[in-house]
Length: 363
Image 1 (cartoon, rainbow, N blue to C red):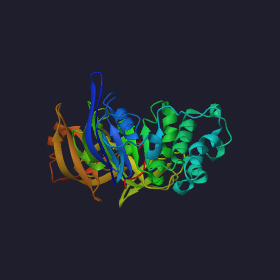
Image 2 (cartoon, helix red, strand yellow; image 1 turned 45 degrees about the horizontal axis):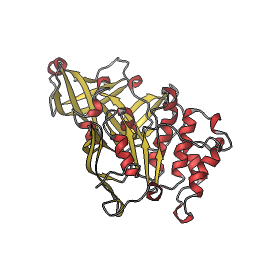
Image 3 (cartoon, rainbow, N blue to C red; image 1 turned 30 degrees about the vertical axis):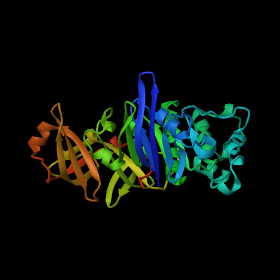
C-alpha cells in the first residue's frame, strides 16, 4: 500500500511542487534542510493545507481530489509536532484518553496499557502535565497520537525542541515505537543521525521538491548522499546486542560478524538494533596487526573506491555477512597499501568510537 501526493503550493518566493509515491511500511524520513518544504508537505498530507488541484490518496482511500476533500479528523492521522501541545487542564491519563474515547470502538487497535508500556509512561498516568520533563511530555504526546489508533503517524521533528540529554532519553522510545506500533510513520527531520537510527527509507527534499525516495541502505552506499554532508559517511549495521560482560563491553552480533561496543546503558532492549559507524573511525590494514589496543578486527572485501576532492577516498567494503562498511582514508594511504576494488583487507574499529546502538533494524 502506498501514499500518493500531488500538490503545488505557493508561499511568497517558496513553491512546494510534489508528485510522489511513498511506501506505507515502517518509517519514511522526509529529510532536508530547514525551509525545504518538509513540514508544508506534512500539512498537505494531514489536510491542514488545501492547495487547489491537489491529489492525496492513502491506499485506495481518496483524501483529496478535485471532487472531494476529507478533513483531518476523518483521515485518522496521528500528529506529533516539535512542541507537545498537551491539554494542561488534564492529567496524563486524561490526555492519553482524549483521542481514544473519540475513536469508534470498532476502530480501536491500540489501548492504554500497551501504549503506556511501549512508551514507559505507566507510572506517570496521574501526574499533571506541568510535573513532567520535556522528554516525558513528548512521550505522552506520542501516546496520545497512538491511542487514536491512526492509520498513519506524522512526526514533525519530534526531537527538535529537546536538549541533548533529553533527546538521548527519548530516542529508545522512538525506536521501540517505530518497531512495535505497527503504524506507518512519516518522520520530518533535518538530522542525519535520526534518519540513520530510525528510518527504513528516505525521501530527500530540496527547494520544495522530493528529489528521490530510496531505501536507507541505498542512501548510505551513495558517496554523494546528503546524509553525509555534516558528519561525513556513515555505515549502519543491523544486529542484536548482548548484555555487558565483565569488562563493561557488549557484543554486537550481526549474522556471524561480532563487534565489541560500550554498554549503552538505559532501557534494555532485546529487539533488533542498528549500530552507526562513522567512516572516519574505520582503519584499514593489509595484515591483521598484533599488539594493538583496537579490539574489533573485521576481514572485509573492497567493493569500490570513490576518490574525493581533497586527497581523500571513500572505500566501500563488504563484511563476511554481506553488509557494507565504509572507510574514509587518505588517497596517499590507499596507494601506499595498494588497496583496490576486489582486494581484501582488515577493518579496525575502536570500541569507544562506536555510537550507541539505539535503533531498530530495518524491516
